[in-house]
Image 1: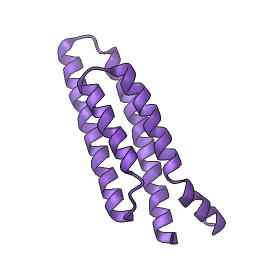
Image 2: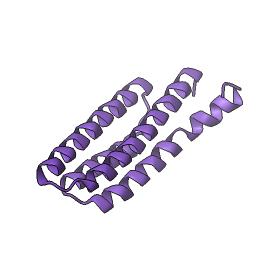
Image 3: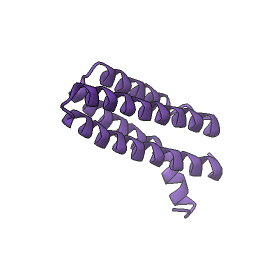
Image 4: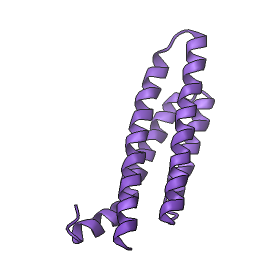
Length: 119
């Protein structure tokens, strides 16, 4: 692994992790909406947000050229599907699993950057 890839991997992994945390918070807000129109609109906006995060993840895969984001990509698609089907409890669990994947995906890069005394 070279320094450039390690930095990009670390950067994108942190971006995905924070994006998923924001998504979790948006899901919690969605669950509180009572009116059907608000709930439907909120669900659409959350799905649009997650689709944008998915596009960012695919950009990261192209930039880094590593395929260890494949599991995270699948998890994001799972979250989107669960929200579309109103399976909010399962979506919460999937968000947690996604955050864990994003955190562990950059472990090798983090170790590399620590060894190089760049972090």
